[in-house]
Amino acid sequence: MIDSAFPPTRSAALQRLTEFVPHAGRDYAGKRNYDLGPGRHVHVSTLSPYLRHRALTEPEVLQAVLGRFALSSAEKFVQEVFWRTYWKGWLEMRPSVWIAYQAGLRRALDDVQTQSGLRHAWEEACAGQTGIDCFDAWAQELAETGYLHNHARMWFASIWVFTLRLPWELGADFFLRHLLDGDPASNTLGWRWVAGYQTRGKTYLARPSNIARYTEGRFRPSEGELAADAPAPDAPAHPERLPAPAGDVFDASRPTAFLLHEDDLSPGWLFERGLSPLGTAVLHASDAASPLQVAPQVTKFRKALAEECVTRCADRLGPVTRLDDAQAIADWARALGAEQIVCAWAPVGPVREVIDRIEGIPVVRVLRPYDAAAWPHATAGFFKFKEKIPRLIGDMKGIAAA
Ligand SMILES: Cc1cc2nc3c(=O)[nH]c(=O)nc-3n(C[C@H](O)[C@H](O)[C@H](O)COP(=O)(O)OP(=O)(O)OC[C@H]3O[C@@H](n4cnc5c(N)ncnc54)[C@H](O)[C@@H]3O)c2cc1C
Image (spheres, rainbow, N blue to C red):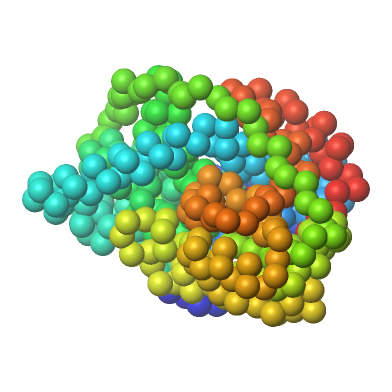
């Protein structure tokens, strides 16, 4: 792991944003698909590990970019940021897709135990020892740095599914265990999209010519080394869409315990609404992202980012404790004399799963205005969603970003 690649601080995120902003227009639109390799991801922002945990928020990124460029000039970049928002909203309204992924993963892991051929192929893929140069290099880059370029993620997932013929859930799990930005929505739905479960009849095929072109010749897979086609699976229909979450309204005058978690590490907006807690518990749930061990650098990054948030906000949090169990959180809040636990809305994923189990004290989950405005539009495909972007950006003005 290259420790210095992603310093776990908000100031590092802000510095990266400042450096990237001048490149968010034509540079990004023209060059964003080039994957130049570890340490050379200069055509993309590499902000995702910070955005994922909201050490930096989408409105902050959008406001910085649109402070420099007209929407028409930075359209590509803005759309990418909204891809994240779209996937989040899509999964919030169809949480059973995450449950189905977890069940599929457990089945695939059972098969790994009982089928030695599958186990061998899976182990080789995870270790970057398949003999396919590009794939092996990306597996190693991911393990070493915790990051992969978007195009590499697409190629990697495609080779995993269509060349190596491994279950997509095992690949999604490999990513979730190693990506610093590992995200239940973007990751699960990104893999489903490549494998043909997200958009009916549509899969993504990694082509040797495309890889050679966009890696500037670093890799030149031979014809025949990669699958020549990517047949669409017989995908089940999407589950019925639930209403988008509205979030709770909290009464700041009631004695409150604050739950700070890794899905939202910028609590400034809650302080602005009057949050003044008796005490704060920091919840870490990353280890539950997989039945297997999450890479230590991912856990380390998330914990450090959360601790940095605690330091940054020390004068607003009251006494701080670290808890990762629902019962322990409820006991702690009651012992504190709190009548409610307040937290930022935790989207579908491991943090939500812990919060859902808290009993005996009301949990008030507050939804950011950005999510409340955008998520309900994730009703169908991204094409329809992106038509709303200009209006969403118009409405964003005046939103307290962090
Ligand atoms: C199979 C697969 C798995 C993925 N898993 C994850 C994941 O676990 N976590 C994650 O954050 N992203 C995931 N992505 C999306 C995307 O690859 C990353 O967000 C992006 O590469 C992050 O790098 P960046 O910050 O340099 O992106 P930039 O190109 O600089 O984009 C800016 C921001 O826009 C958002 N964004 C960009 N592209 C996408 C996209 N395709 N989908 C969703 N958001 C996007 C990210 O927040 C990103 O930080 C996955 C994509 C695929 C194909």
